[in-house]
Figure 1 (cartoon, helix red, strand yellow):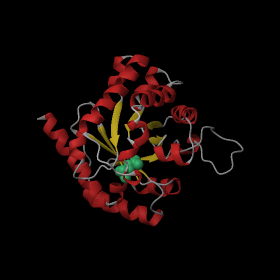
Figure 2 (cartoon, rainbow, N blue to C red; figure 1 turned 30 degrees about the vertical axis):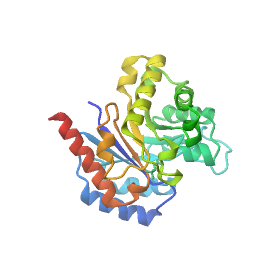
Figure 3 (cartoon, rainbow, N blue to C red; figure 1 turned 90 degrees about the horizontal axis):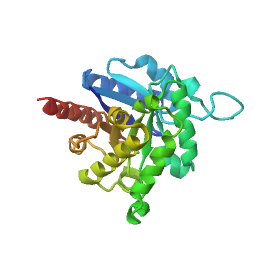
Length: 260
Ligand code: PGA
């Protein structure tokens, strides 16, 4: 059984004290669910103190980024090797990193490989901009992002990669247009198809695919009901404890309905 993955991307928000407060509030509201995995992605600085505070039956940690090399003279960088005992996951290739920090397809590929080499499961983000969508380039772009990012991995390694489809135009801080479930399903199917062609159907079937982009407590159940959608990557709404706890609760209700 694939557990539904709900990921909180706190981006560059919350210092250690604020993060600790949010975790306490989430801990009061979110029970341990057999069918759901809740992952928190705080800033790098907060990972260590938070790792001592979280209830590990309920929460796992993710990094938001790290460098491609394991160690060396790379001033200002942190490696996946340094994070390996702290986190289960790392977000890689988020559109903010691709756009603001000019991460190329090859940078993302090397980070995916570095994470896997260090036993950290990548949460690889892919998605097209509004202009690319308008130009009819979505399929080609998603294909290039997915195939390049996975190209140095074995099929067994690919099974543990999570891919989040995050159309840039749907991310709250880039415009926040509401994506239609039919559009999301089309791209999730395309991603599975791309992975099937490269690594076979069973690998593609094992992988978890998420949706991200303006997910809130109100919209989450609709997205999680999409066939082939195994979870959500949540930005702004994850900074609000009530919203985020309600998203997890919504995921639980969707799973319960699907099991019934
Ligand atoms: P959002 O962000 O939920 O605020 O749209 C999602 C993301 O950027 O991962």
